[in-house]
Amino acid sequence: MNISSRTSDIREPDAHVELPTGVLTGEHVAESVRTIADIADCFHDRAAADAADPAQLAYRVQRHAPVPEGTAGGLMFGATFLQPGRVGDEYLMTRGHFHAKRDAGEYYWHIAGQGMLVMMDEARHCWAVWLRNNALVYVPGRTAHRMVNTGAEPLVAGACWPADAGHDYDAIASHGFATRVRCIDNEPRLVADTE
Ligand code: S6P
Ligand code: ZN
Image (cartoon, rainbow, N blue to C red):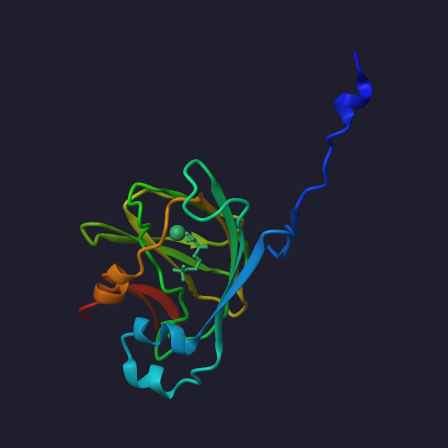
């Protein structure tokens, strides 16, 4: 047995995840930033959205993309850092999306802070799962998903999804989610969008 040839391709990882914080560092890691201006149209209280500072940070997303987006069979790994706060009585949220490849699922797991992952199927039936206490949440295919921060600290969650899932933001931009998470009597409540 040629031991040296068997040990000659031991590599360093190309990236690291700091488990207590979710922060990603290393190769193939990119970051995007969304401000209040980028999510202003998500809130039902447009006057409150217009009154908010458009440049205020809403959330950051870090992605480790070891293969080009769209690669069949590949995976993406990400972390979302969603600021606390409200616009009117509605908590800060991510824009939310269906996957363009509709049957693509996704894993989310809670890292820090407290909030919910709001999901909506194609019939616009909505539900939410708490993102707290190290929750692991599976998002089935054909299900839009959005993080909502109901706490006082940044809500941090990891995610892993197929590299060819793609993102369809238009369906949410046009019709929104059927359910909102609003602060009522100092509690987060799911409220139908028509109310
Ligand atoms: C990607 C995954 C997350 C979100 C992130 C921001 O499939 O679901 O990384 O991209 O939470 O949300 P959004 O809706 O602005 O992409
Ligand atoms: Zn997704």
